[in-house]
Length: 612
Image (cartoon, rainbow, N blue to C red; front, side):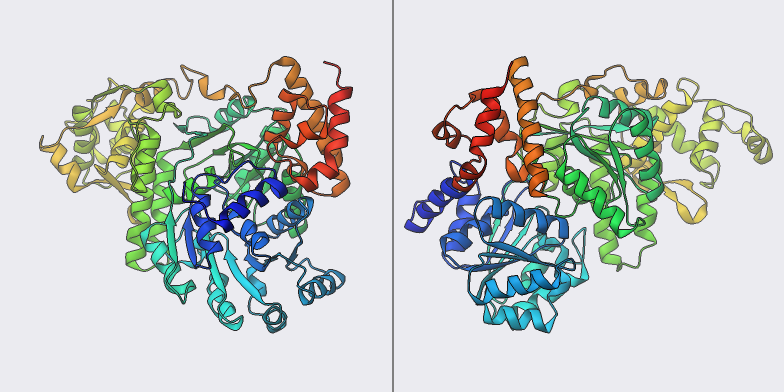
């Protein structure tokens, strides 16, 4: 914790009074202090670490106007509702702003009443917007999801390039750039394109210790995901898919299994997407089945799980997507399914993109890091944090730490597979190569005379699913690769050549290979078990359900997400403490002065009327 100062002391007092939080989170204090002192700041901090408070609090303490560039209309709308519920003067300008709301916002700007104005990126270049804001004395521009400005970032957005020119038109006010994922190259480009003055840079830890990390080879993805969701019934979560069609099919399958599931993808009508997004944000127990078109800027704190039906495009994209779970700091679950087909698809997408060669090289590195994370026999959190340049002890909160892994000497198995590639002139795909190893006489085996090869039938100690797992691990280890220009032909890499010569040993994960024998029938169902979040007893849990119903009624009246009233963490504390007075209610986490005045009596009545 940094040394105290009058402004920082005032910030902590405002935090308690307005937001009902006892103190700044680790890392927030030094960022808030720098912003309060008038510095330009670039801050990289994990999702859920409280980035928004780093501009909301200074706006109140310094009593000045902060413009927040935000990428998502729903996020703006809900953050404005959250700020207003806390008694803060906030507004948003985007494509949904009607003429009457525009006039009201302009009046508030002219009268210097606003503290926070959320602005969509496409509004930056509008002369009228620039003219009005130039007269409104903007003190700071806060750029959320700042990695979008960088071509090296995993979510580049061209409209973010207008922010620098926009700031210049406003007289270059202070800038606070915030992101959860930015490596050194991305940070450097943010500095070059966004700041006219050298910013103070904070790079805080990337760890999200409340997230359980799990990754599984795909066997029957639909069945695997349904079992996972069964452990999270009536909880909010996101399932990411690689195609629009898959979102529709999985959403239907989840509904058939008794879950409230909605599809979301860029091919849907705008109104249908907005309705689905609003339903997810405003209600409990909704599963959003989506492509990566969904999620940027989502600020729903009580997402209890994020699952991937296929491997994402990079380790940074995966980290950003799982980071949408557990933003309230309570335990949350993640599950990523992956297969050889995913790895091949992602590599092909990189190779066929229009990106420059250097950017393709970086993207391959990021994908390889994710593949290595999927197949690692080490603690997943250690491997993940090592990618971001951090060290840690085994976490105890990932599937590898919890379930353990077994390894075996896979040198001979790898040599058999690599030899099959070489003896067939590296011209054939996985299915044909496995046929050779298993000694199966197919039409293609006979056509090419491959039953005469020395490797024909030498791999009968493994089943076909097990050989697929071995091929995937060879691909992950860089011993072999796939040539998509030659119809998916497998070929031996330089590292694989060393294995063939006996100059390099190979270690495979036994648990992954053995699990493949039963085509995905798992020996443990631990992953499907619901993570205990509340820590409440049976009676307290029933009270929590009653409080959530009360919250839902209030949220409908406000036409706002449930968490705008109170976050889950507040209701859990309420169910445990059973407050009977406003003083006791005010002591709960997240109960500031405005919410106490507005909601206390309703919840005190709900606690009093509860019959356990």
